[in-house]
Image (cartoon, rainbow, N blue to C red; front, side, top):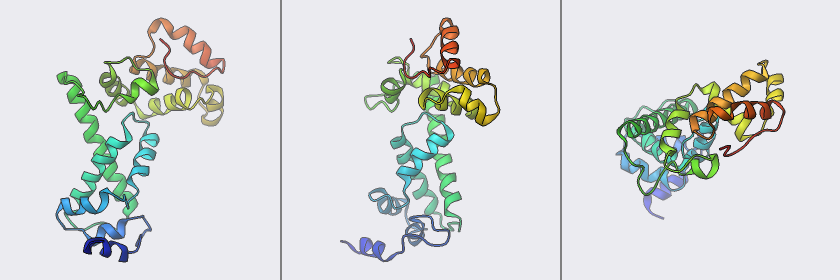
Length: 217
């Protein structure tokens, strides 16, 4: 164990608002970003890995959680290097995740506009395996879906990914089942996993309670 690691062990897991890892981060605030990054990347004292997954589901965005995790680590280290960390660690971390995600979304949109290929380590490949997106259209599908209103994205996740019947959701939210199904359909269209000719069948199936999942082509 080197000196810095020993120093880490002497720092309480949390301070102030109880956010895990913030006390450790405060011990290194104002340091070089690379020094801070080295302290938080391996053991993830801020629990960013879990936070990223939960944040993406809360905001119903289709981004690889590991990609957001990496960008969030950089964001946290850069901001902490400026010093003056706030007392409210939870809100501060939420802002870091928001900024990291916004950068990734802008990067994706720019890559799609410019026709930039995804490269060998395709960060959107999970859309093919888990969401039925046609290979070669992953980036476009991601950009289109993530540009939808959050309410539409959330409904897609509720109905298509998590299999909640639209009529049950209607009882919980006060919305009409037809409106809920329309949002789910819009999400599927953005991903390119259905065509307009499929709509009557898909809508009828969803309203009938047979929730759909995966590729409907």
